Amino acid sequence: MTRIALDAMGGDRAPETIVQGLAEAIGDRQFRAFLIGDEKKIGKSLKRHGVDRSVELVHASEVVGPGESPSMAVRKRQNSSIGVGVRMQKEGKVDAFVSAGSTGAVMAFSLLTLGRLKGVNRPAIAAFFPTKEGFSLVLDVGANSDCKPLNLLQFALMGSIYLSYSFRKQSPRVALLSMGEEDSKGNDLTLAAHDLLRSADLINFVGNIEASRILDGVADVIVCDGFVGNSVLKFGESIIDYVSESVKESVRGGFKAKLGGLMLKSSFKKMIKRMNYEEYGGAPLLGIDGAVFACHGKSTSRAIRSALISTCNYVEGRVNEHIREELATLTR
Image (cartoon, rainbow, N blue to C red; front, side, top):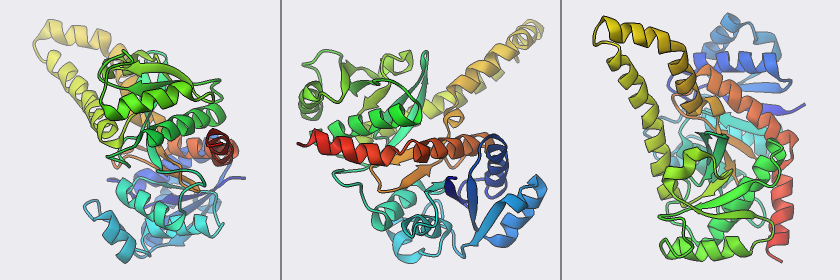
């Protein structure tokens, strides 16, 4: 059974939302959970959600604040819920770690404590984007602001393996995010990365993609450097709030507007749900020598539930083993 360490103190509404999400996940999937953080606060939430008998508490005396420098956190917050959780995985006490705390701190602790998978030049943060066809995986979305062509090649391979073994997606289509779909479009990085991706037999490369095509679902894996990826991610997240507010404003214009809004309420809810990144859980840190998932600080209980289930799929699919094997083949 997969053993997961869950940061109970990470996120804007911790520990209540974290524990609620854990309770929902336990009802849907078999795994062993270790909740890390303030035992008193966690204990009260566990009793409210009736999961106190199926979870092991691990006390952590510190919490990494949302504004803390990741490098300072690594030096001064070893006893934080993030530090303890990552260390438990290093010591073999758990198979994975999930946190809605500071993504920068989660990455910093993971790199320092767990290290990189053999052959990985730089780990990447992968995020799901909803599309007309289901979803696309975009990476990197923030771990590496400056990249080399080799990094994008490895991102493509790691993303493909993740979808293949966690989601059973056959031969994922890989695209390179650029300023045009033509092979000749892009900066020095994308031009060089395009040549590498085109010549890689292990990757089902379908060419360049513009940002306007991401939601069309024309690719399963989309690679870019972390500066571009993070900018696209933050813009995408803002669309959800914008659409929600626009819908609310449109039904305040009078009786007819309110009547039309009520008639379309169900459709609007489905649309917002489809666009909501939280429906896809956490973002895996691909390339780390361990299974680590970073969730959004605003994650709802449903997002935590989804992240825990995705983590189980990651571990059970032996994603890291396949990444090691295929990277070795790629570099021969």
